Image (tube, rainbow, N blue to C red; front, side, top):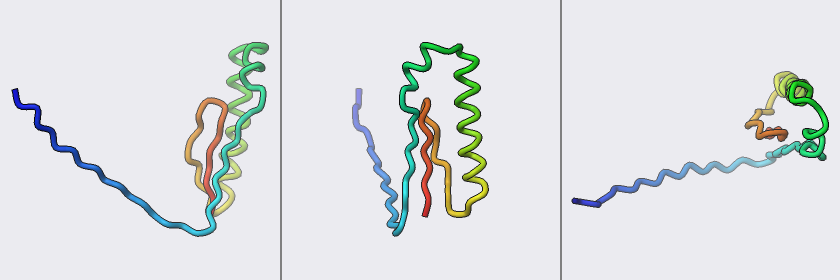
Amino acid sequence: MNNNFLIITISLMYHHSNVSILFADIVGFTSLSSKISAESLVWLLNSIFLDFDNLVDKVDGIEKIKTIGDCYMLCAG
């Protein structure tokens, strides 16, 4: 058996001046999630994330990166 592997690493790096990253996390989310219904929790996250999405759509130069659980990440610049 031949165990030769070809490993290719591609690294894309860019330099940008004047860039900001926002990482918004809901303080106390884990505790809150044990006190309200799943439906209420999803409604809360949806309404908060929709507000962020609407702001991102209105302002040039801001891009949503992703949401992770109760966290919203975006970049600007």
